[in-house]
Image 1 (cartoon, one colour):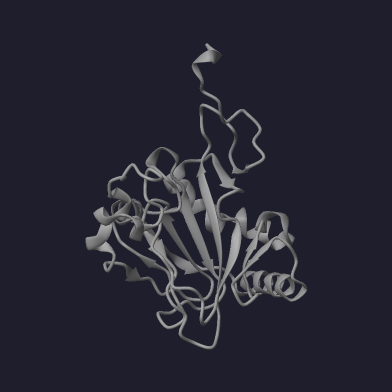
Image 2 (cartoon, rainbow, N blue to C red):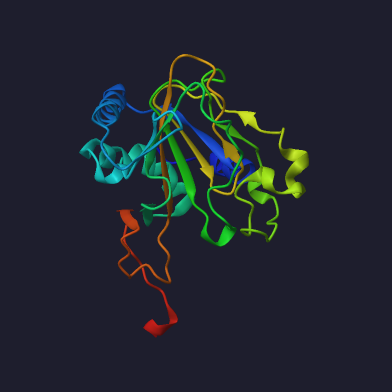
Length: 240
């Protein structure tokens, strides 16, 4: 389902958009089953918290085939094409993971997913369990993708609380509850975080990052990117 002009305008203005549908129940169940198996078998690569609990499964694209099925699904790529154009790549070395938000996890911090606007991404979160205020739904500061870059120490202040210039906005994040199978897309420069899980349950989600094919490097093979729609165009001046 391609986006309407009003949906594109909303995304550009606010920095995020809830897609108006959910993924098929069968796909969600397959994804959750593959993750449950990886958690049970502790299949690398993964990250753990201070209690040894797995909180992140990395390299989704290289795991079970169902992950590539959703990564390349028209349900994901059609709306992204409305924002990125017909030639789209998945970034393998940013996101490309499943996140398990647990009770007692470290307090979340608002952050950006990329340093500056010349290499922005569309971050995409797929919720495999209902995401509520109580179990730590995503929080976003609308319009924060337009906030200035501070220059130090990392030309964007990936972590919002490290920079006093953003201090007045730290309490402006809005919770974005999502249904099971729901998909949230947002500008990677929008400040966001998970919430705090105060329940005994979990909040399981997949996080992916997409961008347009770079017309100045698109013809070059790069193991950190995966072409998922269209072609790798090259429009460098040296062609002429």
